[in-house]
Image (cartoon, rainbow, N blue to C red; front, top):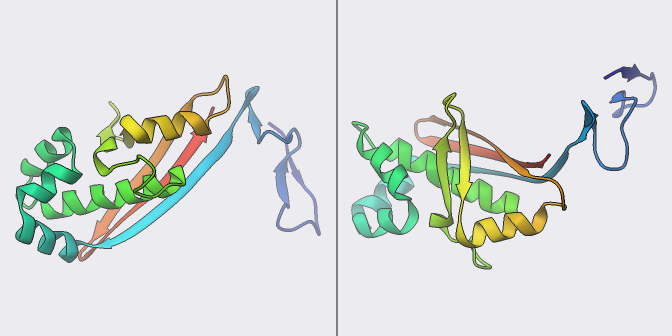
Length: 161
C-alpha cells in the first residue's frame, strides 16, 4: 500500500492512495469499523456488589469460563472488574447497551491461542452483531483490557473484514 503525504490537508495528511468509500483496502480486502466502545469502572464497585449479592450477581453477569478464570486467581475482583468493563464496552460497540435483547452473559471474554483477549458473543448479542455486518464479510472483535487499582478499563473495536 502506498501512502501519500499531502501538505496542508490535515487531518487527512497521511491516507492510503487506494482508499475508497468502503474503507481502507489492505491486500485487496475491504475493512470497515462497525462499532467502537469503551468503559472505565471502579473495582471497588464490583467488590461491594459481590459482597452484597455474592453468587447471585456473579452467575447473572459472567459466563462459566469467566467465573472459572476468576476463581483461579488469589483475588478474583480485578478479573471480574475487567470483564465487566469489557462487556459494557462491547455493548456500546454493538450500539445497544444492555438492552434490546443483549444481556451480560451473551458476551464473554475469551483468549485466542496467542493469549490475546477477544469477545465471544451468543444469543441477542450475536444476533445484533450479525445484523450489523455487511453481507459477504465477517466480524472481528478487537479487545484490550487493563487495570490500575482501583480502576479497570476496556476498549472494543468491532471490525468487518
